Image (cartoon, rainbow, N blue to C red; front, side, top):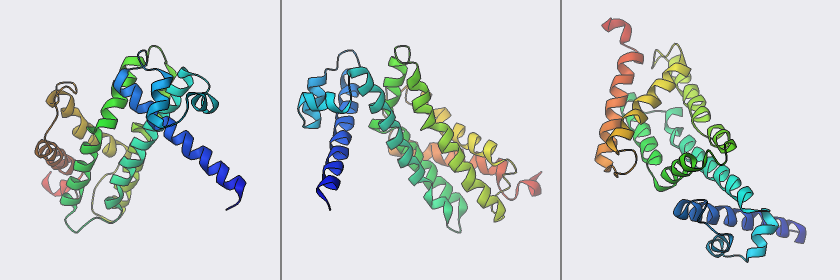
Length: 215
């Protein structure tokens, strides 16, 4: 690799480390209490380096939120991959994917992302667009695509894949707020599995291939 390529790679890696460090500090301290020196320490860089990459604390926060949302989305999109070639037991495949999505939704990064969004959206109203752009809409589109392919293969009757995806996500995420007491209670994995199974059971009752026969 050329020296210029090495330098460019180094800048990208350093910027990524700064954004990861910033997200960690903002999640721990909140925006108001976080300081750039602490972010620099977390990222393992000098304080001036932070300013060289991202000009001020507000810019740093916005970019950290964008990077955090993008990482969360990438993880969720990866969780949908089993639906590209599901097992013969479609219910089991859907339950595994649903369980994986719930685990991602309740992990530390996702919870921190939501806390920061709720607490800082009045100070930074544009972060709502940043998070949504890399969040529910993109995930629903990807899920709808998977459901549409399953419908074409005769394994679902999702005549409106966008609506089917929206309803499946609602069945998964709807119970979490109450069960987790607005995120203040950690849910055991067995409970997440129960929510996933119940959601898929209801989803297949509405969109499963045998719906017409039961009606």
